[in-house]
Image 1: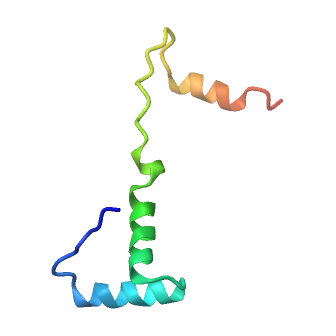
Image 2: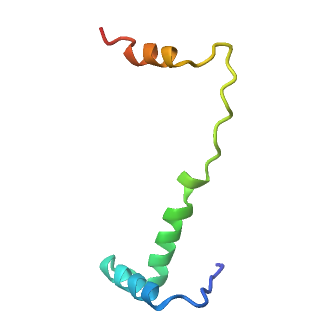
Image 3: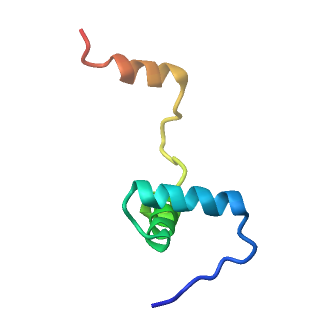
Length: 72
């Protein structure tokens, strides 16, 4: 399994990571992995959808009609 070395980690960040790991009952390594996974996980890596290229232009009027459709 690959590893990661972080050089010149600020002391205050080291203390915060250690405290947070203790609160979550994890090692510092497991806590760092959890934080990194949350930051670069699947939700942040998905691709943006292609721009709309339909025949009908999306106008504010069309959006308002769609919002109110079926609310009578």
